[in-house]
Structures are given as C-alpha cells and as structure tokens.
Image (cartoon, rainbow over all chains, first blue to last red; front, side, top):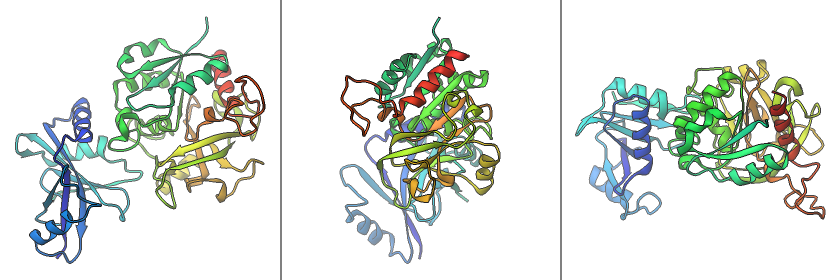
Amino acid sequence: MNRAVAINLKIPDNAAYTALVTLRRLGIHVMRVERSEIVRFANAPEPRTLAAAVEADESLYNPNKHRVTVLDDDAPRSGEVWIVQDDADRPVGWRLYSAPGVPAGPDVLAQAAERLLCNPAIERAIFSK
Amino acid sequence: MSKRIAVLVFPGTNSEDETTRLLRDCGGDAHLVHWSRAQTLPSYDAYVLPGGFAYEDRIRAGAIAAHDAAMDHVIAAAQEGKLVLGICNGAQILLEAGLVPGTGEIRRPTAAFTKNAPAPHFVCAHVHVKLRVDPTRSAMTAALPRDAVIPAWTANGEGRLAASAEHLHELEAGSHVAFVYAHEDGSVDDSASPNQSALGVAGLVNREGNVLALMPHPERDAWTFNHPDRRRGDAMLATSGGAVFFRSFVEALQRT
C-alpha cells in the first residue's frame, strides 16, 4: 500500500511563521501554519513499522527537532496543500488552520497556494480531496 | 541635485556593501535602505536589490521579500518608470514580484530562477554575460556597446531560469532576454551556461525596459583586486570588469 509520512519540526518553525505572517499580510485569514516535509512510500509496511523505519533514518529524522506522522492516505490532509517542484522531489506540505484545531477551507487553501505558496512556473499544488 | 539610489537590505541580504561601493565608485549616490525603513523609499530615484538570501529564501527564493512592504514601494516606483535593478537574490525577488518579465500580474510570477541543473547544487563560477538585446532596449544598458560581454561571478543554488514553453516564447518574442551566458570571446553555446538556464538566460528585462533582473554578480568582478587580471593598483575599477554595467546604470539614472 502507498503511504506518506509528514516530518515536521517540533521546535519553532520560522519558515511556517513567516508564511503565516505573509498570508495575513495578503489578507488571507489563517490562524496557524504547519510545514512538513512529505515522504511518500510505495508498498509501505503498516504505520508503526513505517514510522520506526523513518525515525531510524538520520538523513530524514533528527529526534531533537523532528516529529513524524504517518498519514492515513497518500494525499494531503484536510486543510493541507502539497507543493511539489518536480515529480522527483519530496513535496512540502503546508497545513493551514483558520481557528484552533480547525483546518482551513478549500477556498483559503487555494488562495494561499495561488498567491504565495506555489509559483506555477516551477511548482504545482496538490490539494486535499 | 544628484539622483539617489536605494540599495535595499532585507533580512538575509549579503551583497549590499560591495553593491553600494561599486555604485558610488561609478559616480552614483547610493544609500543602504533597510526593509524596516521602507517608508523612506519613495524619495529615491532608483532601486537596486542586491544578492543574498532574503528571509532565508523561506518558501522559495525571493518569495517572502516580494511580498514585503518595501516591495510595495519598489513596485509603485517601477510602475512610475523609475529604474529597478535586481542582482542574484534581487533578481529572484523581481521575478517573484512579477516585475520581470512583467508579462503577468504583479506578484503572480510567470517564471522563476530555480534549482540549478543538471545537479541542484550551489554553483560558484566566473562567467561572462552577453548583451542579447539592442543596448537601447533598457536605459540601464544604453551605455554598453552592442553585444557587450561582461564578466561576473555566479554564486547561487537557484539561478536557472524556468518557465512554461508558452512563457519562454513570450520572453523571446518580447525581447525580454537582456543577457545570456557567453564565453569570454562572446560566443554563445550551451556550455557557456553554468546551470542549464532556459534560453541561456542570465538576465531579463521588463517590457518598458526600466526593470532588469540579472543573476550573476558583476560587482564581484569590478575592482582590480577581484578582477582576474589582478593588475597592480589602488582599489581602481578594472576597466574590463563588471563596473561597465554599473557605470551604464548610473549614467542612465543621470539622464532621467
């Protein structure tokens, strides 16, 4: 089964914070931004084994600063857009929240991608279904 | 009264000092303006965005700086016809701001200087750029001879022009390709480009000719102490170095 993991910082993420400030400056109402590196696996083992394998790979994971989440699907989560530069690359996942624990809606996500997160000349955006 | 040039400094800019020094050595009245002093920008007559890593290249190279309040003033100034030059990271910011090539909407980029190829590595190399358009296409290049070849240093991990085939056609058709990578003798072929930039592009100009984005650094090959000839002398400008381009910029400003 294809699976994806999101690796994000558990220490403050300056890039996510800067994205938050810039989105607000653009008038896009967002309360919180989380940024993840998305790593996709074909024929992946069950989630616990996959998480352990990622956490054992020092090129992906540093226990002092990273958190690993195995996603339910090989697709963006609610409120998340994946930005991919070319198909060989790992996507960057941007998960936006409009209120505490409330993922941003599709319109906000589309605006955020179009106006800041994605340069269509070199990137494409993959939205949650 | 001399025309004043603002050299913009964002958090992470790192080439402001040599850029300002070279502008001054070429007769320009250049001043550093930090992003936090953006409200002073309208009083300047021209703007130079130097190289570096503005806002650590967060999201993408140039993306955050392109949305900074300082760029509101630069965009307004460009639309008034004032001269705007971006070098390296400054060039990336101008593309993200949509000022160059200027074929789309503001802050809706149609092209990008992105990861170098064939390997996405930082490239530090001495290069030459050749003027690809008629010198009068831009006031900033008007004092250069036709087919001018200018030495410079490329120092970036993301200097390769990329755009859709449609937009690349637009760049060609609209004479937006101001500079291409070339050999020292002016010949142009694929091997002259250090990064497989589309169309061999090293620099782009907007339709009106008042905004120019140049990826390599002419200011890093300008004085005798950093020019490959290394002639003896006291911090003199190297006559065959990148100063010729900065002189042309300053002369253009004095003419306006």
